[in-house]
Image 1 (cartoon, chains in turn red, green):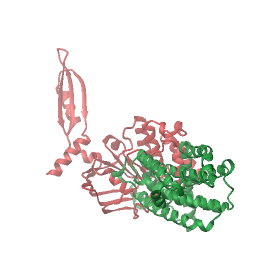
Image 2: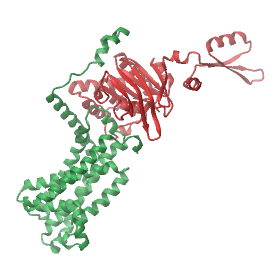
Image 3: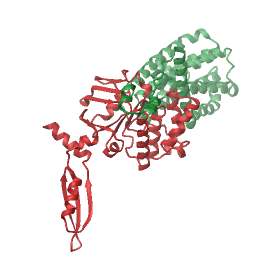
Image 4: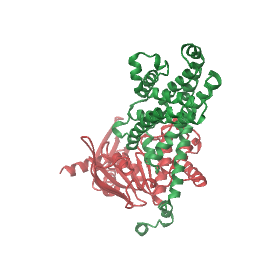
Length: 282
Length: 280
């Protein structure tokens, strides 16, 4: 569905993209991970035809982003809402701009109101809504026309749990219906829940791509055991290991002291980053 | 493409829902769709304007009040004093209304909504028409109401040709709208826009003879008056009220040229977007 090849974009001396390549098939969720300045937002802006690349090609089923604009849904990182306009009016505006009318539009609005838990705030102006409610409104306006490609740029940034869960549910639902999704985030657990293909961006290019299991395979996690001591104090052991579960079982079977708590930490985004940085440098 | 996906995953029943390609519309359908999008944008902008009508009310009520209190002075001071006070204040407060055009565009930048619109199916032309048609109507309405008020309350002679007056109002509103849009693309904040629009409006209208007739301005001001769009607006309006169609040609041409130049500048800037480096 989406093919982006060797994109380059400079803002003065800043190399926002430097050979960025990424594909997404229909029904696939591609989680784009990366620290600030990795090029995620510039990539989203180019695919949504807001910015032209200095070099490189973007195609959506063989068409340019400008030609396929009506089939893209975008929820940018920053909130772009009209404070004096209600949630319903936002959805009506973006639905009508996408060509929806009458009963079709009303049905699409009603469906999204349920999916994104907006029912109770549909007739409230967005300027008085909470941050999470505004995030959901923004996502709804990107989803209203059932786009074939969905670009969600940090859709859960600063969001509450309800918003996060609603967002993940609706993304999973739309991907199951065949929508290609590019989902940028800093939170690895979200991509694990979405069962996304993960692409890691760094310094304007994608430096790794694969499933979570593929990417973190071989990376060390951490096992932490806390023991009670005789003098009412606690003692802690931390072990870095690539097999945290097996190590934990082994430790528990060998110790005779009372264990007050156990913690197993799987490899994190930072672990992945550090590992990729080392492998890139070498 | 669909076949490839169906081979990999058994999602055929639901894929069809999201992946249906819209047929290419014929010319008439495309025109209707474009009209629908412009209609949606116009409705949206009218709703926003009606929910925040403060500026509109100010620029309508203030000249009405001033006309009543300044009329005796003008009638005693100059020949055709009623015409001078009505057209002068009309022009002056319509220039102030540039701030309405400017702010309605500038807030899109502050709210970061312009890029949301640009990434929709609407073309740049549709976005601009949807944005500017309501403001144009507001400006036309403001001048029409003030002119009617001038005739009914201030004693402005009824114009022999309503057509000429309507034409003058349309031309002037177009020039103002284009100037306001151009201003909005270079102002960095609402405060900056407000300063430029207010000080500029006072200069343009004073120099153009809206407050004091050009004939009794100092020599240097009379020479500089022709540079002011306010001068040509006043000339156009007074000729239209007098029913002098021939005399309207030059001021109308100058204002139209100014409007086209400012409009082209604004369109170019708005189509490109402000970009990240220019975000507030």
